[in-house]
Amino acid sequence: MTTGAVSNNQPTTAVLNGRVNPKGAETTYFFQYGTTSLFGVNTTSTSVGSGNRGLRVSVAIGGLAPYTTYHYRLVAMNS
Image (cartoon, rainbow, N blue to C red):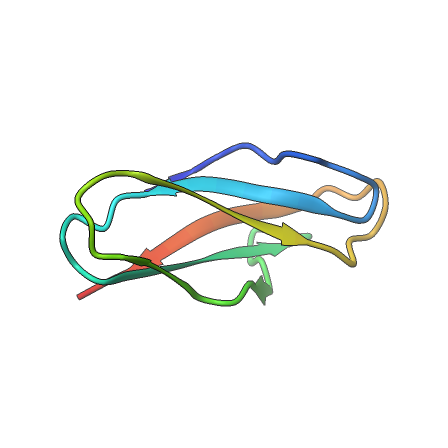
């Protein structure tokens, strides 16, 4: 799993990107983000299946405060 760069960055919206490799196990992912390194907001958990190759993942987020620094990370979970 790798947290990627933000794309389509606008004053109140952005797209968070990353890469997840399930390595053969049913895997879900979500992003955490917020104005501190404690994050505070989780996106909806989404399945990436159980393949054996890296998959690009992204989530569009909104409701951001304009011209404010946000911290974010990708979280992937499986057995």
